[in-house]
Image 1 (cartoon, each protein chain N blue to C red):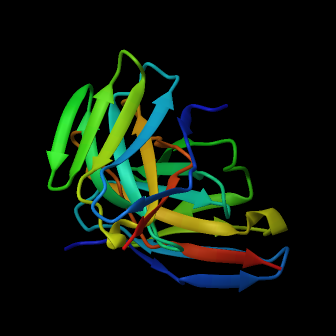
Image 2: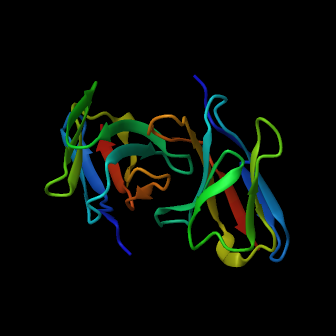
Length: 114
Length: 110
């Protein structure tokens, strides 16, 4: 069964450093998302991406964040200068376009900023 | 801004019990309703997907949507220890953003 894959599973970084979280969405999906979940809190929307551009973003997704689809398979989230409060599970998700369909999530990357 | 409300539990039931999980919401524009299951430190796994009001059944799982009351439910019949997880409701309008509840932690005791 096709699935969304994310790497790495766990990333530890020092405050102020840049991190790139990687995702390979399901191959025939066209909408891509990043969500995050701070420990004990809700899953929160960060950004959606379609046709090589951001289609929606939340207040959380400020200038420190960027997304890219550098090739036909990867979808990345970059945090330029990490803060302690960026520590969270980051989930990538994808869905097919054409009709409104459900989103499938990856297993997540646990980001720890120290 | 509390778009979606969900009782975090924890909920503990004996094996074989019927489990009822619920969410309420305030945005009447929500049209698409989902239930995800999340095991500890894992990604949300889609269980049920429903458009608009009505019931949907898949094996031991039944999802109900009552748009007039802004209330959705997930029922699990013959609950198993492997059902122990956090259950997240999620919903959206016609756009891209999914809005999640806080999740309900369920433990099924053998």
